[in-house]
Structures are given as C-alpha cells and as structure tokens.
Image 1: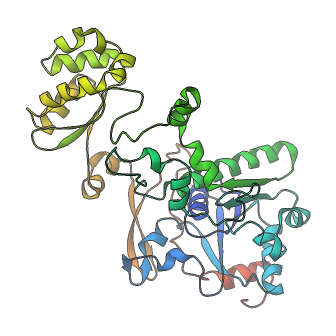
Image 2: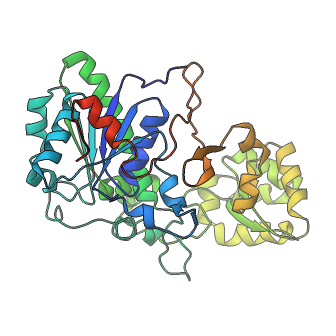
Image 3: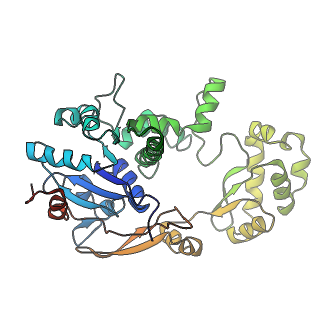
Length: 385
C-alpha cells in the first residue's frame, strides 16, 4: 500500500537529530529519502553510545529508518555534481550545516532553485540565518538554556534542569516537517518552491506557550514549579501510601468530584478553593491538605477511584513499564525490523495512524553509503564517488 507522501523525493544532508528526525517522519509517510554523508559516514550519532548492537548505535537507529544512504565528498567538484543531479530530481533538500556552509559549497538556495524551481529548500541551524547569533553553533543543551526552558524546569531547590531528551531538536524536526509539507502544498498552487529558515532557538522559544504568555501579560518572571502547573491547581504529582501519581484536575467540577471521592467534601465548601483562579492563589494552603489524604491509600486505589469518577490521573512509569503498556502495544508503538549488521532491532513506532496510507518500515536505518552504487547508477554515473 502506498504512503501519503509516496511521490515526494527528499535529499537529506542533515545529521544528528533535528534534520534526521524530520526526514524519518517524511520517510515513514512514504517519501523517498536519500541520506547524504561524507565518505565513511559523517552522522555523529553513528558513534554515540553505548548502547551499540554489533557496532550499530541505538541513537542512530532512532531517527534514520526509511532512508537510503549515499556517501558524497561535498568538497569535490564531482560530489557537488552528484548533489546537483539529485536536486534536479528531488522535491525537498534539507541540511543543518552552519549558516553559510551551503553557500561555500555552491549549494545555496538560489543556485539550486535555478536547477529546480520547484525545490523546497529547508535549512536548520542553531540560531537561524539572520540576527547577531547566526554564526554561533547551536546544540540542544545550549538552546534549552538560552530559550528559558531550563529556567522553568525543575523545582525551587533543584536549580535549572534540562528536559530528559533533546526536546529542541525534536521540536525543530517537527516544525521542519510541518513547514516542508506546507511548502509542498503551496507549490501545488504556484508551481514554485521556496526556502525555509528554521532554528532550534526559535522552535524552543515557541514551546514556552502558556508560560511565555504568562510573562508577556504580567511581566513577572516565572519560577520553577517542579511538577506543579503554573495555571491550574491541583495539577501535579502526589505521594501515596506506596508511591507517587499524577492528578490533573482541569476544571471546578472535577475538583468537586475529587473532594467527594477523597471523603473531603468540605474542601469544596471553602470559598477560596471553589474556583481554579482562587485555588492557584491559595495553592500553598490547599496542596498540603490534599497530600495528607493521598498518603492514606495506595496508588492503585486512587487511580481506580479517579478513573471511576472521570478525573484525569496517571501512574509514573519507567521505561520498562512504558514498553510493556498494553495500550501502547495495541497502538503498535514498539516495532522491530531486520538490520544487515545489527540483526533484529527494536524501535519506537510512529504515532501517525492513517486510515488508507498507513506508516510502514520499508527500509532499515542504512549503513553509511549502503546505496551509493545503486543511486549513482540511477543518476547515470558509472562508479561511486
């Protein structure tokens, strides 16, 4: 069965995470993705580990399925000729070199658009191609620090904390995927491609959402609240008799039900607890009262009570529990494929569930240059470069 992007051809000059994550999603949806690396393999994640399986990095595997691989020397005239030939047949080219690098290669947007006016050219950098920081290298950890994300992650005593995954890379990869598809849709009307200039810094800043909006409206610098919510109470973790759980009360009616199931209807009768804005204002008084009650029963007990009363709640799983969760398994969120070097490898599946054009794994994450001869032959070249 064909994928949603079956007729789209993507030339992927990116590496590490943001770009490869984007192109993997495009590949999952059926696009033909050709991953371009320097001879020997230049994607740093190939060597990031452990863990490795038969020398293949788990990190590399997480963002590179559904691609073919070609190795090309971009510092040679022959290598540039190969890229230009590929561009002439492609719909999308994506790179995450430092600002100015593609221009030095002679692969700037204007040059490639002259070859293929319909090309969608996506550039991912740390800080974007304009502004005083455009020449600075950008890594997720640095971007998390500078964007304000670390300043609001953690609790009052922990100091600033980063998110446990490279979240700004993931966000930028998702934005790139959205932008590329938007440009392809617009091309159907205009017949013209265009350039996308995406940065990790911009993407991370966009993710401040309500916390950023709170500051812009109030002028008050937000503080780290740990597992508490800035705008909703109670919406946080609570300790129980045997562990910890999450309660996410989204409205006043849910809070009333929570008070009833806890055997504390009198909490709702207190005027300062009756509305969410007032509960936020008096969280330091309310939360300890709730915590005292939650400590009297087990996590399983409170989970069942909350579910029966339609109060959003959840256990705090570790990765072993996540991968064994029947809900995720029913949704095919853990898959496996055969790799010629690593053997059978397990991967996280796609959250995209199409009714007619389902996502499927068509290609294992490729070894560096695995398809060079095949691709060059299709282009009319007689040997690998």
